[in-house]
Length: 542
Image (cartoon, rainbow, N blue to C red):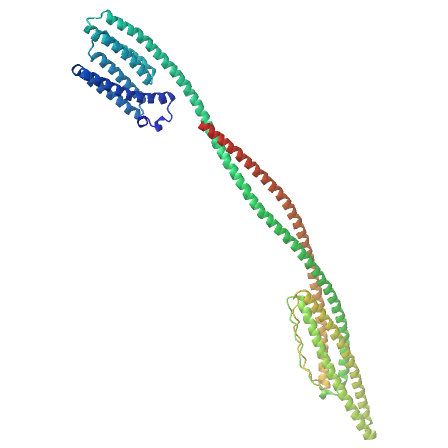
């Protein structure tokens, strides 16, 4: 029942005096209601006629105790206490005035009740002045009841009434003094208790703040551990990446070393090719001189064999430049070989013509011999023609041998180029056939002259191509050397990168060690904070 009028929610923040007085007030209200109802009903049963008014007054006054309970529920604690005090005082008055009296015994009963009501009032009073005021009012009730009711009914303020009144007065005064001192002592004790409670409350607030800080520190420690674990995970990933980069740097260093070796081989081969091209240029110049001599010889006999010449139709195809210099070198060598083959064809035709001319000269000599003296001049001419034919055969054989040597050199150079193409994994593609066959039909000395001119032009073109090939070989060698220098720089950078990665790996291991130490400190901090939190909970519970 107490929780109905004084629930837990109403007790928060109340001083200790109210926390102790209000429950007593509630219980005393119940007790007073029950007591006065029972007492009034019992007296009413003994004397209904004379006690009827007293019964009504007491039960009406009990309403003050019920209203006091309602005021407690409304948190009007001082008003509730004052109303209960007023109810006790009224009941004292009803006992003294409305109950029938039979003498000093009834006065003694009234005095005892007034003293008892003072004690009850001191128990439910919230303020000290309630006790003082009630003490005066209670004594006033006792005095007025004695003078106005008990003395007249007993035949005056006689000795028995006076003795009881004086005795009760002497008992009443020390009782009130004791009640006041008791209230003072209780007030001091309560004040001390409230002071201690305030101190404990401040300590509890500080303790709660400390617990909050500890929990925050615990959360920070957990966050620190999570960060340490996350940093370790990221560190493992970084270590893996560093290892991968380190392996890649080593692979790049190895590949750059291989590329440097291959470039050196290419440079060596280009130098050898350049030497071969220089040799070929010298040989082509010799061929050009020989062809010039053949042309001079053919021009000398051209006017004798003008109808026997055939026109050489065919033009040398122009060289097509490729993207890479080495392709142009191969193409140039193939053209040289084709030109050499055509020259051999031309020389073979010249050799056939010279044989036919020799046969004609022999037939002319035979006819001149048959003619006798009239054919001597013709015999001389036939001899000269035969001599020119033999010289032509000799020169054509020399040209054939020279061209054969040239073809051998070109073939060797082509083989070397193909070997280089195989080594550089497709740097040079298959040599395209760029030379168109020169149409051979040189049947006359006139055509021999034209073929010789074309041969001279072809030889000059070959010389030009050979010079251009030499320049391209030099350019290729220069580019390869530049590439070799770049590869060397790449190799040096790879070495520096490997060294830097090694230093980074060492630094990262130091960082990992520091993170591990931070994690250990965080775990120790969490353990200490959890222990502190348990101690705080234990202290708060106690």
